[in-house]
Amino acid sequence: MIKHLKEHWLSNIKGDLLSGIVVALALIPEAIAFSIIAGVDPKVGLYASFCIAVIISLVGGRSGMISGATGAMALLMVTLVKDHGLEYLLVATLLTGVLQIVAGYLKLGELMRFVSRSVVTGFVNALGILIFMAQLPELTDVTWHVYAMTIGGLAIIYGFPYLPFIGKLLPSPLICIVVLTAIAMTVNMDIRTVADMGQLPDTLPVFLWPDVPLNLETLWIVLPYSIGLTVVGLLESMMTATIVDDLTDTPSDRNKECRGQGVANIGAGLFGGMAGCAMIGQSIINIKSGGRGRLSSLAAGVFLLVMILVLDEWLKQIPMAALVAVMIMVSIGTFSWGSIRDLKKHPLSTNIVMVTTVVVVVATHNLAIGVGVGVLLAALFFANKVGHYMHIRSEVNAEGTSRRYNVTGQVFFSSSEKFIASFDFKEALDDVVIDLTNAHFWDITAVNALDRVVVKFRREGADVEVIGLNEASATIVDRFGVHDKPGADDILGGH
Image (cartoon, rainbow, N blue to C red; front, side, top):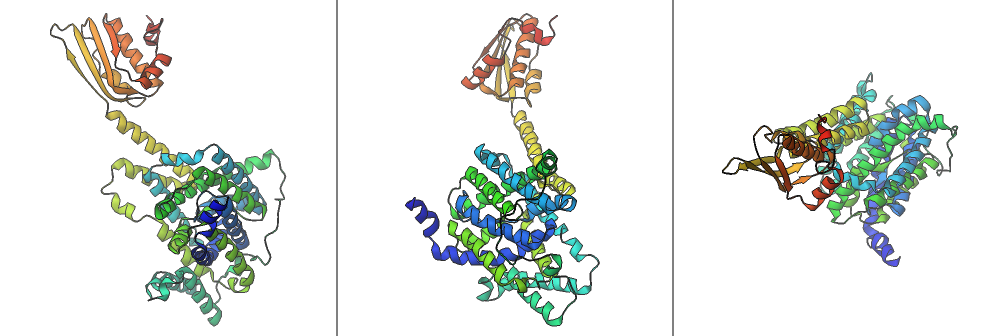
């Protein structure tokens, strides 16, 4: 216990506290902006970021990783909030937490290894596009002041870091918001502000049980959204954990992180917050600012709440154009621009998977569906590629009465037809030897293919001997194969 406390909480106190302040400053505009994307009051995102950051610091599986309200999750909530309201969103958040805890105990965090790089790239690109598209309503049918403020905000965001000394001390999105808010208040511009979007919190979050009927009808309403939030939340969290692992050269417990995300979302839902997950951008900010331990996440959540309670009157004056500029920056930073350049040198199958993931996500506005389609396509392309690596060569004896077939490669559902087609069943032979020393049989389809080959040769009057099966292949062939059992001829129709 003491060792855990020192390692995860007390080993980097100064760095964790300072990085927590920086992260809290950067969390405010994003939490408000993501709330607006989801169609809820800013306090919903702010409460969520506070609750999730604090809880995940205690129960998460990855030190130094920041979690809170995110754009990926917010995008999935839009329709639910629009059609059914905030109370149903809170129910969906609670159910999301339960599903994530179940996923953790089922060790589904390990499934991340089945998500190919091309799917991850497509996921990230689609997320960037959707975040940008979500800003368009704020840039449609507005005065020139909004465009000027947005362009000015982007100039500050990308230009401020180049200032000597001070440019590295403060996050440029925060400077953008402070400067544009000061300008809007000074010249009294008639533009939309955060106050127009809903009430900011002025008290500590309180326990709130959703005021909805707890019946099957409610379950069927929220279940599709909760499943999507569960998948996207865990996927983004696992991706972020992988990035933080690389940056810190330390391991993370993915299944514990799944459970931790679930507990954090239940906590957020019970205190009036929306579902969230790990934040790639904020986690990188934390690591780059010196944060390493769980204290950094706890500090970020606590400082966030203190700021919104003390500075609420100032936060209400933030122009929406400033938040639009911040979100455009997030979308630009999220999109993998290198993937466009890589289209020329990556294999066609990789490009198809990436582009398809992007198209499906943008078309459905559902990151979970897009990732599912991408994973399926990647699996099909992989199976097709591996199937082509199987080949069979043969040699006949001097008398022309016996032929030996040497099989090399993987035999499974994708290569089974090629396996069968590689044998000449019409050749007049007395003996056939099928050498499987360099082959591996993976599934029942492969076993069935072997059965059909053996039975076909026997029908032509040849004696067939199968040799060289490795232990794993022999196990599946012995269990499911029928060529050496009574009634084997029935697999070809039995005539």
